[in-house]
Length: 182
Image (cartoon, rainbow, N blue to C red; front, side, top):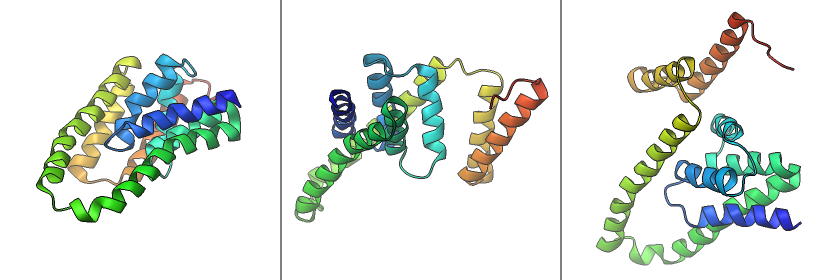
């Protein structure tokens, strides 16, 4: 029970102090569960992010679910998810209570304009860090590049990109004669 509470508090802390949504939370989750706590390694974290990104729903919540489940099964998933969700719920509840009275405030509008570049920086930082830590090159470099071009130039739907990337990974494994495991 002590570990479940620690898990919940870790995700609660991340959720309480991250602005910008799930992608901005990824580097903080990585720092907490990989580097600080050592609960999972870099490679496994990247797999969790890939699964969380592919599954429906917010990436931060999906990451909490997968990380919690990996560490303590269903109870771990529940506690990690509660930790990730509760700060947002409480903050939105408080903001909603006062938002109507300050929504037209110039100070509030300027604060949100100032936050946007910081969120972009956090997302870019997360991507660069994941690329560096997983030695992305060759095939692992070409697929994200093609996926990005497909989305930007041809307006392909992200689900189609995910399906095509999964198919390319299976084909690569078969062509190389690698073991596909179970």
